[in-house]
Length: 251
Image 1: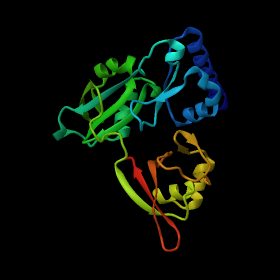
Image 2: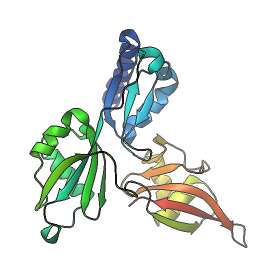
Image 3: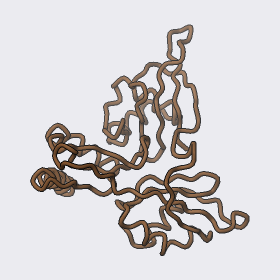
Image 4: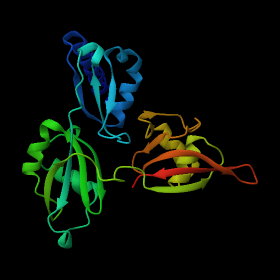
């Protein structure tokens, strides 16, 4: 894994240097949380190349890194991201689709995971961001997920409310420490939550963090194997001085 990480980091520097040398934008494919964490560790040394990240909308977890900006390149280009809608031909006879079903159908086409960004399900319709140069092939080849026949098409934007945190909950916690909040949101013991932090399975805005750190308002916290949520801050304080914190959970 360390060798793979080193290769990835070297690739980031190659893209940054190439963007500056050629005055042309350079892009990574979609990056997962581990890759983004590696990028953030090098961010200070890469910002000279106009580094920006985008996944298709503000709350996307998987994102593309772009090197180059208008100052370096003399022009502006969008990120090479296309949004697809995967709609059952007949909802009456469709399976109840899950994120795993849609991702499995996409991977069944023989494409790399890095081609696909965030995937959302709403009213049993799938929406996913993909690399633009692969969008037409996916539309042509993707015919079903699970046992459900699909119609795939390019759309301009997500329907209202899709892809954002959907459910608000309030939790009484010992403090605003990240490990306390993660334990409360996912009904874990403090020891289990601390173990997740020790094994770098918790990401705050794409970066690993210490469980002892105080949560910041509007931080997006992702926990591998459990889910993710947006921290809203303290709603009130109990009589015993414990904070009641508000979070918005992604479903």
